[in-house]
Image 1 (cartoon, rainbow, N blue to C red):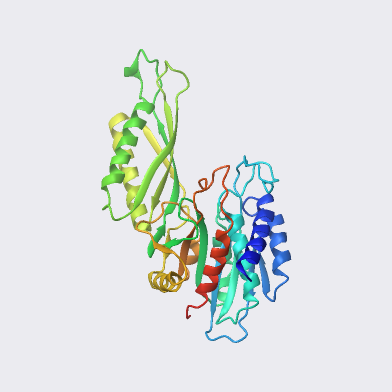
Image 2 (cartoon, rainbow, N blue to C red; image 1 turned 90 degrees about the vertical axis):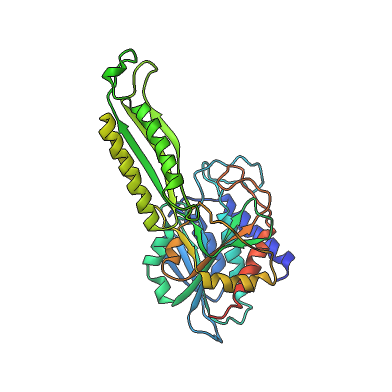
Length: 375
């Protein structure tokens, strides 16, 4: 399909999907729309919860096995403020992370596969619940990758602030393991005029937080990327009573389980020292979150060489501290995650997110180019 015709098709897909965003594992309208398009093509369709897998068998395969391409399907619990004609029709839910565009690209690829002499089988994965609770894990656990002998996987994600139509990635660490931290510090309340009778949970929390930030800076070499940040603190009831409880809410992000365990152990050790010193109690709760996304270095180099001939390819110096459940795929098979430059757009997850839809054509063409790689 010519670029102009492809853009018109992709724009329609994207805007139709943008109007009906749905949250994780509730993508029922989205699923129906995708199925309506995919059933036009000669592919075998499998449904896993609200997810869809479309298998295209190579008629004259030159290699055994299958290559997968994945997109995410879910929206975010965000109220869209834009006044565009295709704005969300579902109050309080919006495609604010570009998943509508990701689905449009994979639908566009599906249409192009009909006209390509495929060198190997192709599996298109329309994956639910990327934002939460992690639909990729459900897809992997379904056994579908083994059923179709999937040997590698690729995905593109729209990248705001990156030059439009560029493709950016890096080998090895690409996205972090992300864990939510909830810390509760319990002390003893008293009137502010009698501080000697209290165990000041707010004061202890401030000192503890400072020590945690110092630990984060020094516990690992600079080359081993990590992040420990707290965005919310809740404490006390009135201004003239010393707080007996303070809650800290934050996130811990690393690129290996070893470093995650090391930092978590240090968080507990510092807490124990404060309990001994001040007589408070500190409870630490955390989620395991998504694993880190690690791009296979050999496959990355192959993809880079392939794409650099026709696209503006950028090798990123540092990984992203964001998180994505694509990592469940790359734990099982080699994969590469790319950013597709969307130009000067509002940030991801913002209530006015939008992008230049012409970059979707670049995304589909990049996917097609990757089919030139040997398997």
